[in-house]
Image: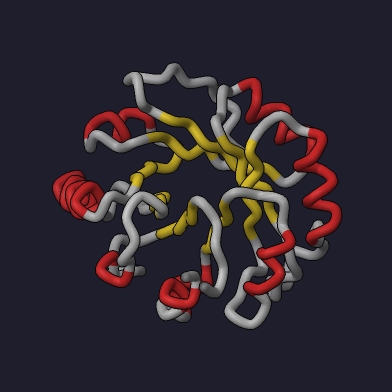
Length: 188
């Protein structure tokens, strides 16, 4: 096994970004859909939701509770700039959030998030975004907080082994899935 965690999050901006048939293991993956609703029809989103359900993949919609309820998503993803408070609409409905610093982590806890995606774990090549936590700082932060933190950022095929030392039950991949879908087969 290459890397083993309890959950893997995939962040998709378009339903065509990734082929869900590459996922072979059940109940380990979650898809966060952040598509533009004006472009995408709700029917297409419902088809994606149905495909996720068939493959036992949890499906989250980003920042749109009405759309999440309309397509019967498993939960809602709140980006770091979203400060609204939401009520869980169903019993098993989950809310996850994204944060970059302590202030945003505490805000997401107040919003009732079950898990918080903490960004940037490793160095990224974005010109406008500098700085990253690193594995040791991430582990220190996760040790003192009473919520499951999910690392995001800079996770590539060449440094995925660093995730073995990260104190988290899961991690999230964004851009690497679009560039190299084969990374999914290397996770196991």
